[in-house]
Amino acid sequence: MRWLLDADVLSQPAKRRGDARVIAWLEREHAACHTSTIVIAQLAYWVRTKEGRQREALQGWLRQLLDAMEGRVLGFSGAVAHVWAEQQRALETAGLRMPLADSYIAATARRHGLTVVTGSDRDFRRPGVKVFNPFEELASRPS
Image (cartoon, rainbow, N blue to C red; front, side, top):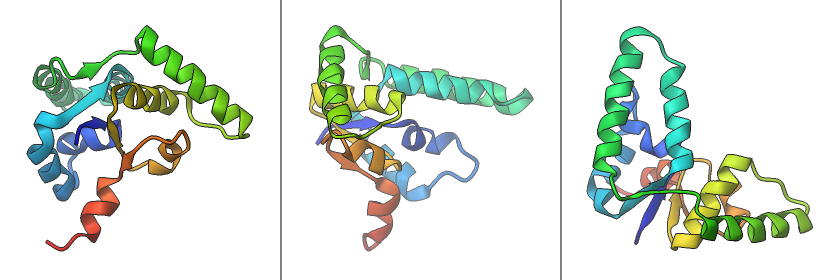
């Protein structure tokens, strides 16, 4: 399986109390993991909300993350834009709303045939994207 990591999952190793099961899963699955430029923007913003040493440490972490994910950060291309437009129209027709950034991430996943890995799985299930919530799924598995 190939994965598209959302910010809440991708940031676990950088958090003071990151979820150990999610971090271990990320280490096991790293070669099959991708992310979106939208997620990178969200993480860059998160880093900028911090001050002092914490911000410096997170900036270093983000640089290392980008190096490690080289070639696996997917942009919002013309092909993704068409998937997004189709998805957005279907959501509107059904009377559903989805946060804009999440809708871009979902369209990226759909275009590339990836499963979104997120703790915010409810929003992502709306457009019919395959979703894996490691915070729930890994906690329910026997150790």
